[in-house]
Amino acid sequence: MRDTYPQIEKEYIDTGKVRYATLDLPLESIHKLAFKAALATECANDQGKYWEMHDRLFENQRAMEPWSGHAEAIGLDVASFDECMTSEKHAAAVRKDMAEAQKAGASGTPSFVLGETDPADPTKVKGLSFIRGAQAFNAFKVAIDGALGGGE
Image (cartoon, rainbow, N blue to C red; front, side, top):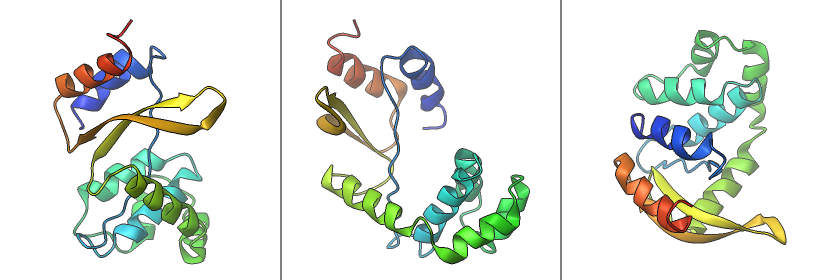
């Protein structure tokens, strides 16, 4: 996805053709610290560094703890980050994301749902297609262009 996302961003997100949203789906059956890692990314997001924390934890899956070391490495206010982690301030939101992702059919990561928002209620999304796993750009292009009616 690291090679594919920049192409998707350039061709579809930056042009306003699609909106990209994420849901947390920590798979504790695969990694015992997955839920805490999701909390860490959300706590980093409080300081505008979601992706920096996400990428750092992904690169350091065997050495996630102590969390504050990662926070310091990406330039966060460590005291605020630690307070956020201790309070588990984002736990309910992560659990809600997990439920939504599972409801959409995601059972692994990465998973992608192409959907259309309801014009009457933009908080509701109708799923159009599902892409499982990291795929080449062309797989996304075909699916997105199809959802957009040929990309017009």
